[in-house]
Image (tube, rainbow, N blue to C red; front, side, top):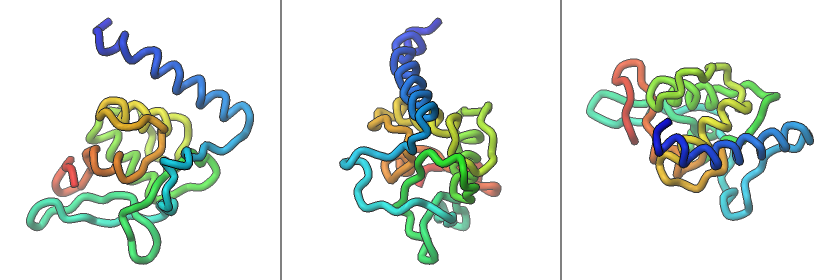
Length: 147
């Protein structure tokens, strides 16, 4: 077992325990007041240009496709923004086990939490602006790129 793996095990177990408690109680995961801000929930995607003629698809919000949005645990609603996130996590960030189903379930929550840890971000399992700006996003023409 590598040092990195053994060092992160307590964090991963804590995140998994918290998620299990939330799911067992049937309570929705919501961000802390400081993390919540005023960001709406992502409900669509937007192609963002990263190089001349190439763009990546990222979760966005509403008809204006504003990029400043968040995704939280939601196992009841299929969402194209979640599919875009899952595709990027799977193809660009090494979460090969992750399904691309459009539901922000436990696997997606834990993948985002682990990704946040790997980039030194606040770990809450919520996809928001800091996570978006740190991670790589997938494009069928370009592959993986950061915004």
